[in-house]
Length: 321
Image (cartoon, rainbow, N blue to C red; front, side, top):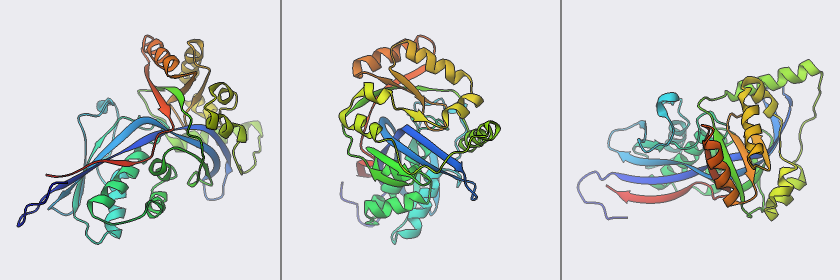
């Protein structure tokens, strides 16, 4: 980092990237009295990243903008730039706990689908926590940052952690899983979003109509972790599960077609990621994933080959302006 010039305010920019995620498994419990659902999930951080550049400003307060380098069609999504933005909330929390907080401008480069079930907003928040911690020399440990992350949402602590993890409770009680072998996926994104609360309400309605009673989930299928540890895509394909998938398909029936097209063009399994509408298709290896993505693109689908696990939020640059 270049030395600051004496006698004048010198802006500093800390740039952090944080990954999106795929829920390799997601078991959803019954509706609780508090309106939430307990889950048991295996999170996998994948190589599709959000990026946040936090720049100190002389003017107090928090401002947010979206970078023109974003790969999403920003005309098609509504991203709040005020206190409703999760990155804004993360900066506000950091300002409350930092002795040397300044004004800050957050420029977000969006690559993870908005309302796509991949935790893009959560990745923004995780990146912002780490960026502001460095920008203001707060000196918080990763454990302390994770505690703040949990206040922002169930997926934020995982984007900070990265890798592979088991999530229990509301998904925020994380246990890192020693699964470092790579698996390869094709993400098929949609040009629309699905409301996570609406997907959960739909699942509750479907279960009630069927008279289905489910138990509180207490753990994940150990076969999933075994397959991830070995990178055995074939074994993993047999144990993928997402309780929310049928609710997502109920709300967006075209997801069934996407899954079918993927599996007919070489995917060994497919799953809706989280609450959707992003579809994650499992491939044998990186070559198969690239070929599958190209095949789906010929159908006019937005498809991208990725791999996981990847590390959580990390600083990529720290410069004085």
